Image (cartoon, rainbow, N blue to C red):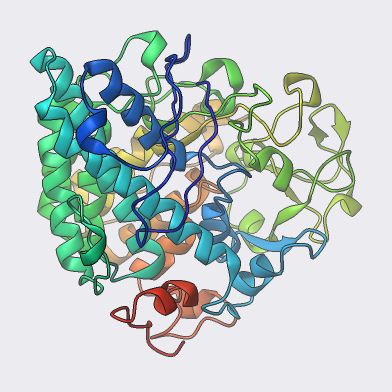
Length: 484
């Protein structure tokens, strides 16, 4: 994707912001950025609608322009990593130690970023039906915006819990809204995903691979049901994903994290990044690379606890983590590269693949089919359907077993009739299969075990993060989360 400049003036408290033009992977729309939001005069054609829709994708990017530190909340706050780095981002250390406050910058930036995306999506959702254009095209445009609105709301609930639900264009005099209970936000997410799934295609052409598909909408719906512990609906949603007959596990686990094998059959929802020196690359390539190498920042150092979680011979360990004497993108890894002796591999690239370190082009696959299978396994296990739950669990383990040096003696199939033991096995599988993919902290919270595994975590407080103080100052109807 090629991007032009965007500037968000604040979170959802300001509807006047500059619209970004993003085009497909091969060419950009020749539209000048708009100034003050003027939906009535702007929406005249399908090209206009696509231009604003493309801007809806921009807040997804994990880059320095966005100051998108979602990885801090999902990974550094968990037992996968400690802060590392050089101390230049005190907010990351605050999150790691559970000393974050309503003034932690990373929280403030995340709130604004996601609400800016929601406001943009609402414009597309409400105005696209009014333009003169092919109905199928209008449906696809609207379906994408519905999904993205749901996605941004879901991200906000993961971090903050109850958040204002913004499901329409709101005039400035009504913009100060109270927080909406998270259950009602989930209701809207599910409604948006249901509608989007009926409007979106099963797949997109190669030049529009970045766009949302039906599987992504069904995937977010399944994940929302998972967070609600509505196990039957999880299973039903997963069945709909499987019925699309386009997803499966890649034979090589590493193909999910290589430049030339992305957007593969395992990818259900993949957030695109490109190394174009335009600020649209994946900045994790710099943040996670050891600071002992040029331009690396060395944040998110891998904990020994995470390394020890892998079973003997599990090849996913070396695919995910670099340790002493390992090849590390052309360099021999030595213990001093990290205070823990381990560094992440995922989302990182050799120096020759990128023109600048902060603009990596390894995408963030937010929903992999492997995770879909583990959702199914978890839901079936929670319902006590033990033999059925073992099947998707085994499918995930079998892929890694086949890639091991000794398949006959590595990652044996889980055989148990005990519900609790199976649930623990599935949770363990999520830990090692999805390591450093920004799920771990949220898993520990939804399982109710974070206080048992995370030093400094206070039950009843740290399940969510504080509402940014700047937003409370702007909007007196906002209340703070307990204990902050």
